[in-house]
Picture 1 (cartoon, rainbow, N blue to C red):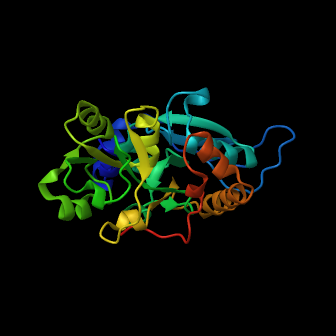
Picture 2 (tube, rainbow, N blue to C red):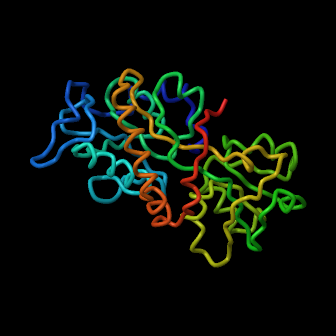
Length: 283
């Protein structure tokens, strides 16, 4: 399943079946280890623990690594947990199970490059935006403009924000794939001449291949996502305002002291992705 086709409806249908997590209980985020004073007070499912929903979408999140989670979002949520004197407990499930997990009180927070959309915001709380997910172009010659995609066979992942606009421009020259892995396989095999992907995902999967170049698409008014990249955030329970306020305060501090920018560059992305602008939701 592509990241952008993680629809709310699909999540609601399969979430109860696919999320094998502990039941909801009362707890306090202030339950701290000796010598640790939490920055804020808010309830969590289990006292002293932050239960985090994770799946595999590198470089943003992976179920590998210490504690069962690693990547950009893992590093950021661990920093928040440290500020709140909470231990992180990773719960691994499919992407479609994440929204129901937050709704049903089985997850405190979900991480992993979730676009801040109006549909999701109706049923969960979103933190303030953490970083931007830019539109990336992948090709052998480093094409950087939408115009440069014309007269080529181009692939992208179905469900991304730019798909409809590219369809209007490229017509039958645009091929849709269920995942970035499938698209990249065709790119390497020469069946397409360029790919359009999340810049972060493309850097992670193709960036080390000397045969290809990954660049951020130059802004073009014909493709809205190139001018206004998606803002990503963490998803939290709708009924836990104290947690949302605490996360937003902690994230603001991590942005101000340069931690978020450093985490992004440590994982191969650009520090400028931390410059998110005014919070907005995708309609």
